[in-house]
Image 1: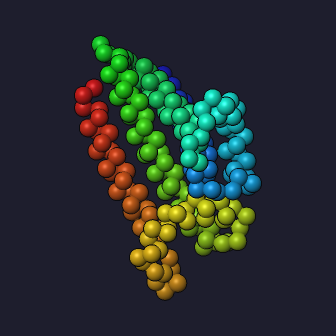
Image 2: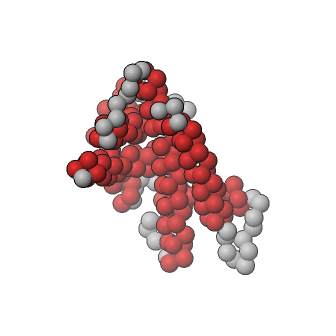
Length: 190
């Protein structure tokens, strides 16, 4: 019972941190504005670690490598702590197990990014129906526009309804299924 409670707390705390850092990364990549409540929240929760790491690890081609590295290490640490809480260890060959752990952390970051995309698409659709000129509409539009653009080229609005969010959600779900299969294959050697 105590290990389940500890697992829940670890997943909640580390999960929130990883989501915030991933959101910061995607906001930077997709050029979403940071001058809004979401951007200020993300900045306030992640500046304490991102700014010092950025001094050591510079960006590359417009990609903030420090932010990605922080998210990746935090996810690897989460997986390691969860492994220890459930009585596991890195085994007889800690080198190979560490490689698998970091690979799992990478796959988990992709999975969390897909869930973040799904959540952003759902919120953006709701905002577009309720109040398309809301102050928060700009950030959600910036985060979803590149993904919608892939489908808007091939599927025009039907009766004034844009179906591209539906296709983005379907593609994200398909990618989650593929990722679950990859994760299952990666877990078999352990």
